[in-house]
Length: 366
Ligand code: FES
Ligand SMILES: [Fe+2]
Image 1 (cartoon, rainbow, N blue to C red):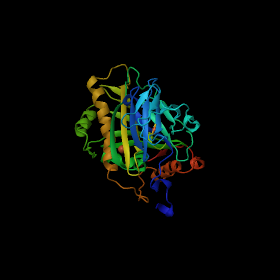
Image 2 (image 1 turned 180 degrees about the horizontal axis):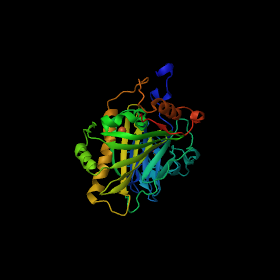
Image 3 (image 1 turned 120 degrees about the horizontal axis):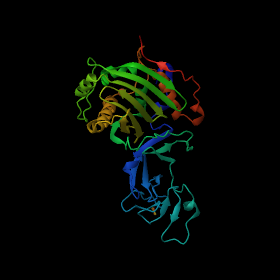
Image 4 (image 1 turned 45 degrees about the vertical axis):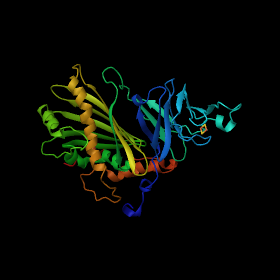
């Protein structure tokens, strides 16, 4: 229960936010491949037809209930064939073939005979739309146009399953106070801008030797050595981290220093597996900011260090609890405002309205 006795909808177990969820990067699914997915406490099947189109269907066949990603199931053309009696379903979830029947029952032939999830594949990822009320998407994730161009290449990513709720992850976007203890730096600028379907953090972080940092257990990377290297080059890192909806964050960053200047895009997302666990994934692409090409070792090392930075946060998330009524100080970011913003994705759609001004809120105290 929060302050004033109010309980947010996202505090109720078993509810998931309405919005887009990334389920896989495109590179993880070849044409003709299928995979079982388990998200939102449900069994799903993801497949890509030989025509290249990806689809996500509920996993259980509407005939007699076999798992569509079970042993013996396969992709044929742009459809998936059930392993039990061989019924074939297309990307819309309509049955298009029954090998032993003269006629396909009307209910089976209709799109959605097995539920097909709204899906977008763009910028190198596959996202599906979750809506408890069954509504269609009413906003989109923006494209990252530079993805897979010659300078940038494809996502380098890392994935972990952790015991946490999305509300713990998203609060990071307004958390100005954790940089000196978790990431080894001090924010010189930290502004948040709230819009109806997105919330942005604009930050400039200066790395400082007197700050602490967390060494993620699962990531063999020497942060202290990296920090020393950065200090020699007096790096200035500017970034725009924007949550597009409640689950997917894009982080664009620019960094200028003497030996090299670079820009990067990160896509960090969390997708709930069940009431207790989320799949936490971080993908990175990086390119030079000027005409000087980036050294190959740097291009190799940077995504690893970026992913490790996200893992620093994950180290906290995996053991923390949610504080419904936190004691906050004047150097903290707008945590309660963020909760109010996030809450709307758990309420019926008519509560989505957000009419607060788009004025940046700074969390830097002089
Ligand atoms: S259970 Fe799928 S075809 Fe019979
Ligand atoms: Fe963080």
